[in-house]
Image 1 (cartoon, one colour):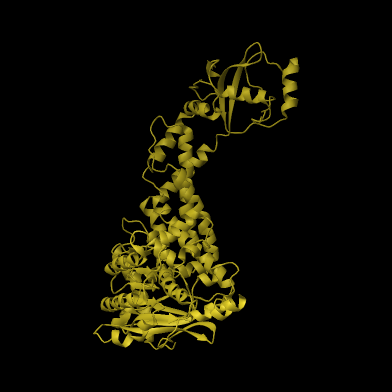
Image 2: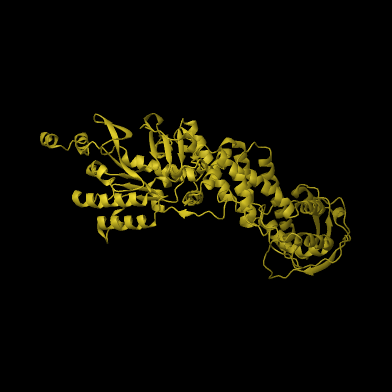
Length: 605
């Protein structure tokens, strides 16, 4: 189909220049979360229904992006939120362009996101620590804040040295930089660094164990906290030397350096394991950080086995009370630090990254993809509200599968403008009408989500919502009947739609007799023209397309056109053009293909 249009509609240089002004107007650096998907709080978003997503085949396409159901749902949810504001679409498209051009950046961001996600799920970054907080709690908090600092640093440096052009990622880079100032990152980094150095001095604990007559652990106490780890030695050799040699048995409890640390794994033996667990059941409280055995207490016979570290915690708090106090005071200075400003970006970055990875795979297969262009209102053209120019486009489902054959993909062109508002699409059975109808819906959803679209060129005015009126499942038509269900659903969609919507109809009102279906369909097309939304209505009712001139006699803002899928003899071409309907359904072709003509059936008999 030959298309003429004003090229200046698709020039977006002046539009892009407005991005920075709009961002400043919305105060990105104010007290609100930064977003890579929803840049303007003033923009309105409408929800694309799950049925529409299914009708367009986007649920199946999303399964190709990631095997994780949670990520599939996240991506589908993002794509379902449509905004007619051209600024939002351009903002998203520019971010995606940066993402798809910087593979290394995507990979780095994914590693950072994994770390941030872990902090979100298992961290306690907003917790205030009181006097009862143990050293292990405080050190855990210390590690979390340190990880948070590293994540912020990593995101900033990941973006800093990349040649990015989108206002979204440039703004994110500035936003992360701003975090340093708003959260006192300079002082935070210094304090945390000093604490890490201070706490890293503790490398070992010396424990004294009293034995009864049967050499069973009877009581335990902490002797010292040390800045160096113990030396390792063989368990069996040292045990033999220490137990059997009289010379190795001490007459007192003074520490001897020739005694070497015995590293015992919990699973080495049942006897050792039991003994080690008993060591853990201590109730001693050391009160002085000197190398002396203090606070010795007896282990109760009925005391159940518990983790060693949990009991050591109480002792260590007292042994290094100065360090614990310093930890608590410093960490409570930053109790307001949360990671929600970063974690909220995880699904947004994941959305762009997964689509970029998928589009990169398609490009490697030879799939033609193009960045969408937003029709600019700066040209002063009134019909930018209804504009769409698609060149060389096709249904993404045709190339989504791993074994898809690109050689058989047929491309098409289509135009929406002030005049070309409604298309009545007719053609042969299995001639590609549904596939073409789906492809137009896919283009809008992908483009408004910022994603590259299949084709050579796509310039458009975003739709405020997309409505699909495709045949319903049998179980949904039980109460009203199929025609009743169709009429009810159409009325609801029509009432909700505006002149900025996209309406896609697939064999609507075909479940009744031709006469009944035709008159309902004709009135529906007239109502659509009256409201003015962009529409494709694919149907077998060729009379509807034949009567286009009569339908257009009324004074509507736009007009309806007959769009046909041409055949090359009995061979399907899957190519569309504006032309009068051919006037037959081509059911005879299908019948001959599957041998169900009268002649073929009777001959076989």
